[in-house]
Length: 317
Image 1 (cartoon, rainbow, N blue to C red):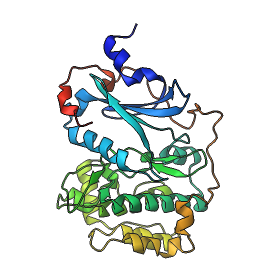
Image 2 (image 1 turned 45 degrees about the vertical axis):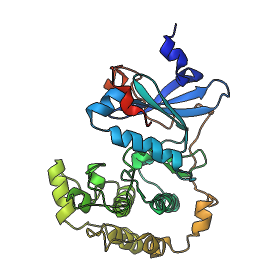
Image 3 (image 1 turned 90 degrees about the horizontal axis):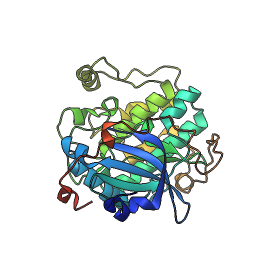
């Protein structure tokens, strides 16, 4: 028997299936909408952990921003609701797994597909930046692949509308730009730095800056120049160098990126329209196939605990 609050919650409209991701205050599960048999993803966010980690503003911003975004390379939000303990984001199911898992499984990604992935990432970020949104969490784990092999950015928990500058230090340490680390104020140009880190990691196999501690890592990002392997084509090295410029005012812009030698011959309209076909397509046996995702525990994590919270703080969700 469900409790009265569970009966009233829209969650009862869904059959929850396998977990395909977990985070510091969320669990991501595939689900089936009972009335339509549509397969979706539900991101289940712990209210208590959001408050404990001072992430209320980010949680509210994530829901607001995702509701306003429509782009072929961004995961779309279908609906959102909440109950006493959790926030729920109902998202489209992108079945092909993420680029990090693909890179681990395959060891490398062929040049044609790598260039297409980077092109699509540039288009996605350009769209966000046109709306004055800094994504701030670009990394292979947040780049999903559709069943036809195209990319979609997911997880907008750190995205923020930035009209001038913002000062929050957030994101994955290896991908943080120097201006974020220095707390001197950053805008959407931090995302172009992250594209440089992404290109390096995917083409070389490791991030450009590594250290045994966060402080050591930040010191290297701030003071060292990137060491580019000579086996990388010169046009690749040139673009990564333009992206990993520490001064954001001198870093490559969208126009310079699209006009670089690496992207010579790319038809950006065709990229946006998904008419450039990747060579690799994830294999899926049926609409519920989750084989492209790693396995996660289905219960027992702190994010699953039902702790009482002041739900009035989530009135704007």
